[in-house]
Image (cartoon, rainbow over all chains, first blue to last red; front, side, top):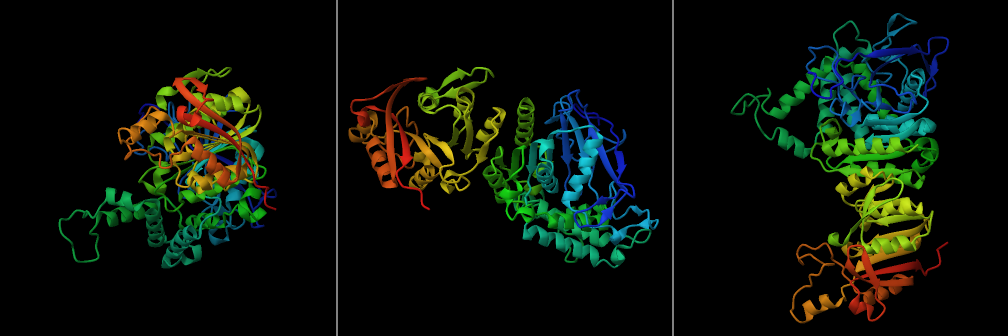
Length: 379
Length: 222
């Protein structure tokens, strides 16, 4: 580790708020409290407090976006390629905050947390949280950090939905917004994949209506959900390039149902690996929050939803992303343009599919770094 | 066209933009503080010059990803990655003061559709294009029997993006058929980077480039 530009050793911090009787009222009408939010920060907040960037993560991400937790860590945070000295989110210039989401299982309050009223994990008694709720809780964190206006909110996929929600919910707090590979309303195709993932979890006999904590976990169901997810994050071409029809640890077909192909082995590995770090109920809650995301709902149309936004937008999509194809970003850009917002919209040519936002890319880095530095100059 | 651009340092920011002689003419045609959309805005040089020199609120539409990158690096905040052959659906009728298209209309699949869109969206339109009636082009075809290659039209026929080349005469007819009034014609002879002279005598023969200022002749539909 400690390669050039790395933020080095970092630690996750926690903010707890909304303790009873001051619970937060959620979009669904129910209340939740206390709420803990996990977050990390990199770089320094300047005296003017105008260099703060909020990074929001996708479905399975967490607060650990950059650096390492201890010296023997094998892997850095999930967006380490972007965050550090001299990287697109330059920690010498910017103060970067990465916030986790409520309903997750990586340090923030979620279905696997203990319900203080019962002393037992919430399970399915955890209230439904939406992307608007995630953003409302992140707002509490930003207030707590003493920041009245963020230089930028950015994120990919479900993170991008949070970016759009931030710009709509708190227009005076967002100067720049970078939604990447995302949409203003989840498509029926994406809802369909989410539903198959949820069905895989719910049909695992170990799921027990979500009441599996301290017992055998619904590993199979969650692993299958993750496998399905991974297929949607890649592209036909990237699968050809990455795996082709190559066989895994064998030179001839096995003529049985054990693993033959590398792509099978990869998906099984990804699925098995995922269950060690992710809670099945959180997967249900987070995918449902995605499904409910539709900025047109409040106003009847997207243009109305964006009527009050003040941020300048950089909207990025990827040519081979079939989960959040470019037309979705175009729809967002068009509506923003009709709402008289400043918008840069662009599609990056890549074979890597939806996951491209997590991968090293000169185009992505230079777009983001130029947009930030030009945006910082303008008040 | 690349060889005929001139580097100009803009006041205040000190940013350097590369402008063609027709860009300079177009800048002089546009009033302060107007709203302008540049179709096929390239690397954003004209937009940045208009922003700094004329306080214009400019927006660009551009097909090339690399060009968008350059626009972002210039500090432009309204540029869309889009195909002009898809029209200008995001813009309401007469919502911008000028819709500008420099050296672009001849590469489009459906120039008629776009010119109508420009007239619908813009209170005025400014279109520039290479004049295929320019005498060197005529001579090459008439005497030597070759597809013309000139400083303005430097490509081989099998490589050019110019699929709808036109002359000043034909463009005038085209505007009439499209229902646009010609407010001004500026035929230009471009002699050196940054330098152009307006051609008054036999423009269709002697001008290598033309700029048209247009407006919609059709009353807005209710």
